[in-house]
Image (cartoon, rainbow, N blue to C red; front, side):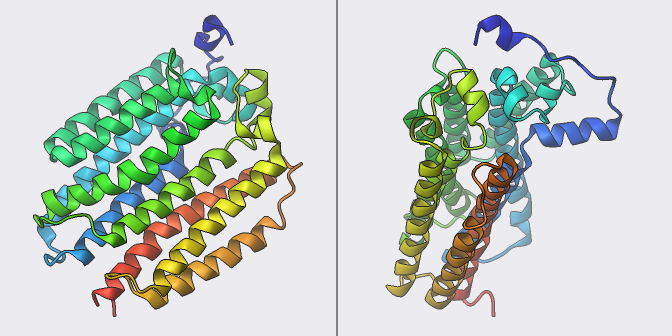
Length: 324
């Protein structure tokens, strides 16, 4: 893809009503990533509360909300920058996105991305060093992922590394440290329970990173974006993602059987075995020749990702008897 084709604006539709503009912004923000980011903030806060001796307090609401704002702004910056650099590819793979469809002009998208990046850094700076470090590092990796000349998304290994390092390691450890030290004022090392969640999400996000390219194979091939799907084929990548997810769930079941401190073992084992069986049943109905079916299963995997940030904190809260 040439520089001129990437920078060429999409045909702009008629002026959008306020509601239509907000809906376009929602699509531009990639809702599944917004939900995932929101639940990770909530989940890590609940885990920090369950592990600490501080407990809930009304005074914590504002710091938690401001943490969420910083993370959401950073999320929009990263996914928005990716869309700015992938307009032509998205016209093939994701024509519903605002830049590809012409709902947003390139200038509008640039303004949104720049504003969100600045807001993310400013709000994070106002909320402590751990949040600032987490947001800054995430934005730096997100920029390297999408923006030329580095554009790490061109390389399957580095693209996957970018995604699961941010979602898996930086977000989980950064948020826990932020909530534990800055919000709850509870100085302690990162406990084993948080490391278990971090490893689970790290490996889980690897499955997301390789699966996400299956429905995008047409546009990626057209614009010379090398992915594991192009190299190995859809079926091989589909199976690989399933087995990676299976290892995730079996690993956390083993952690439950070993009765790791600060986690309710019974809830952890049963909930994850149920979800694992559910995933395999759903996978049997996926037709890899049907792009819509693949996209739906990809969204289902994201729902399992969301669910983990509810199940694991509940297991921690149950262990501390916050939930009866």
